[in-house]
Image (cartoon, rainbow, N blue to C red; front, side, top):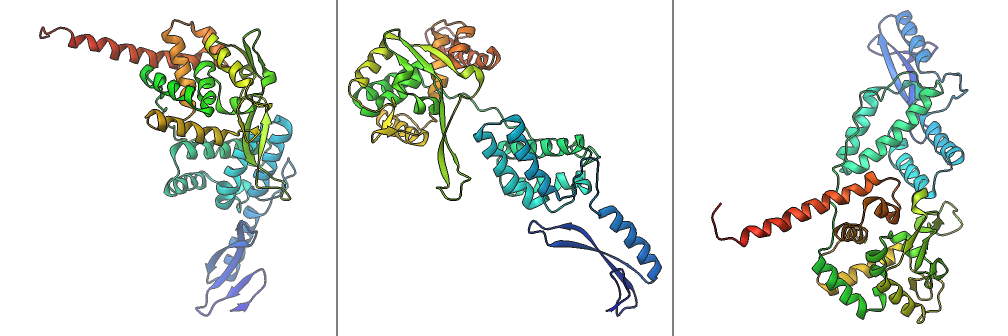
Length: 371
């Protein structure tokens, strides 16, 4: 093809072809768009208009990069200004680098359209991701775009009509009283039995139990102080291992709490304390037993007790349900659980209502009189 300047070429079929950059791939190589016409001046006019449309704007925020640049900058700003937890940073990092940037990062922010967002969400569905995962990624993307709109980088409300899918609420899994008795009997015979007992009698999360030290327990007063939690998260220092244990404050401000110990739990803890020299209540080879080790141990105990596999968090649900069954008021339970409000605790009340209904239905078998 013969070049005629301004990135316009004359093709063999007699038409003129104009080329412009309409975006970039994640590796920053350009993506080209093309216009055609038999009249050179017509192609030139179309090309100039498109180049103006796709050029990187010098906007009020002074941002001239790609959407990938803005998404990365947004994450670092969140970490710096909002002081988000490491676990939250990790979640955003994965969503941005594994999904958002590979699909939308090569676009100029001001050229993003509603159709781009819809296509992105469709692709996430095609990849077989769960509704919950898709919703989490879309919430992250929406937060990035809304921040860009506030700064004048994106001018259109491209997320206005996007309907983020809602994950179905998981049914609360609770051990029956018979299952709890079976599990406790196994726990009394096993060295690792203290782990589920703590969850059953304090309602603590697995990360909180993993980080629990003997210095956090006052056996004379019968009190346990929840001060810390631990998770295994990505390690962004390339010189070290890929993941590392991350210690931090409990899930919410109200999660840092004081729990009164039952006589049974206090007695069990006193026995275990006399048999260990590790600073952590739940230990592994003289060191902390991280959450995934706790989950493995719990699954082994379930198997020995003949109970189907459930998550460790189900023990927290079981604690709450037993407390309500025994008449504890919701406000007290909410404080023991470390909930930010009683609304979250009330979901156990619904579970208890269903439990009571099933129990009352058993009375139908008592009478032989037909209804």
